[in-house]
Image (tube, rainbow, N blue to C red; front, top):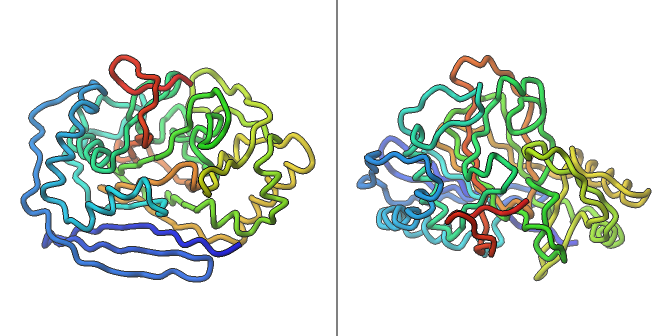
Length: 350
């Protein structure tokens, strides 16, 4: 199988307000780097003159905010964002996005009202508006809220998950839901996952791998098994209804020439010897063959990637619960508006 070329876009903003766009194209053999100098964003500013805790407010205003951003953003970067959902690129990282004044990281509750993070929340929704990606949430997950705060929660100390601090191995978010191209009545799995860093932790390393770079180390027979209904998948811990198991589903799907995955190291289970062998093979590939893109989030970083076309993980990190803990805002998205429209807000039944 031929090497798959994919990219990670990083945009860095310097004190002189000049943007540098770094395009990294990674194959299995080498990392190629191209650098472009873009125009400044000197005239762009937002006044935090309205505060709201309503997800509906953000969804209803995201197009207006994206139109404002569109007027000042460099045309080349704008096209990268607009074209992302339909491109072969699987991830984009933008650095030095606005954050504003922040309260302490909410390590006790694990969440906070939007009014306390208005500036980054507005910018997050504005970027989704530019990319024509619709924010979504799920009933039974994150209390139906669109933004989830990925923080080390005190009650989840030494646990795995978005509120834990132990190693969170390679996975796809919400893998029990229906993949692209899957014949299923289950609600659709999210297509896009965005993380917006409000506070970083130098010990927490996020890794991202393209599915195609995993598949190229698999034989045609192994891919055939992965496409068959020989796997069980548990619902992730972030859902509030326990961990029901979806039985006899494929690990991969293929649609319009692309592969999609529900791989989850912590929640996928084989049903027989063949599927067990496939899972073992994929774990070996992830450990020994592919070279993940490694990201240490810094304040103002915005990362978006295609959830079903990648796998991501996060390393173990220490936490002191002193108010300055690692803090990311997470937002799910879809390229098409699901039919299940509830309370003037996109909430999918899980």
